[in-house]
Length: 470
Ligand SMILES: [Zn+2]
Image (cartoon, rainbow, N blue to C red; front, side):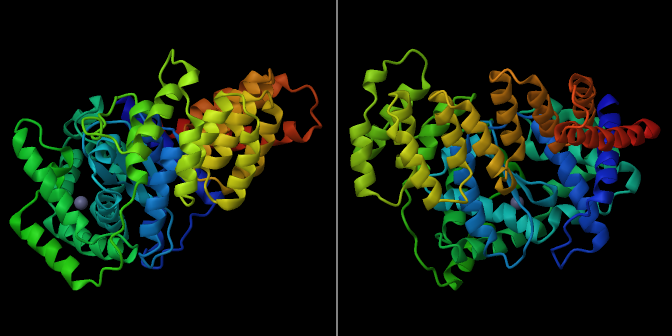
């Protein structure tokens, strides 16, 4: 019951917030009412993700996933907001939550054999969003039940690995109805395949990849009868579905099935940054020279108690010469140089920021490098200057919280911690932090005091509304 109350609170708080901060009504196919509901649900869904599920906060990996996502969403013909998250969960799964929240499990990234395969599942999920499948499901529910829907959705979509998975049954008929609707909508699945394959092709990926991937998963799933991949539970692979996917791909004029190396590099990276130790499908086979170089350096950087003399900047430099367009080699070389205390890494970062101004992973790496060279003040300035253009504000605010703590500036540390919590909709926590912070500030005429008291006021109002609702 506690959880239900919590979500009721959250939803209300977000509603209150949305009233002074009107939701984006950019998508022309959405009725205003739906768009508002969807925005609110999206926010509480994102809170549930951040507070109840293990997410991967590696900027390089997130940026990679986002780049694939943006290629696909750019072809949907709709101008709407998407956020991409990586769930640290070895099951092969992906989902589309409310308000364009797309979740990818680490197990899916690890099991794709090409970027086209990974992109195909993302395109399918993005098509669920453009076709408004989820909102069509929950808009039929009564208003009274809206509060719990975000957490029910999270529990159902993210799958049975989670301790909250029983929530659908616990929530009674509403939960079960939603679960049933989500899992038994052949029409929605067929539509998502149809549009997903179209987007996939238009984004320059191989339109056959979706059918191939599901077919392979299904065959592999038969080998492990007790635990078929999670995604097959919601996406049963039938002959009919495969035939339709093939037919759809054949109708399209495929532009260029390219071979991508980036996926393999990211699968290796995942192995070192994921807590669930996702297996590396390339480990068993002979590694290409370029992959061996990448892996050797990753291992030395990320495994504990490694001898940094095993770092090999030279092989990375050679790879950069051969693959000047692959930013991932450049980023790893910077990490290597920083560990070797080679200050030329900072010049490389300046250049990289110019090359890829929209890649948020690069300022993150830059900030981390500045800290390593004892330039924490500069790192803070850099992150603050880049704030407005970021997609992952929560991560950014958390980093600033840590850096200010390191600089022994607890007031700013509290402030950014509060912003991080506010950003994911965790209003009670944000309120607590701000009430502790306000009396610490001695100069009540400073702009900082003003900022803090404004945020506190906003948070307090929201919180009062929540208490009323109890
Ligand atoms: Zn689907």
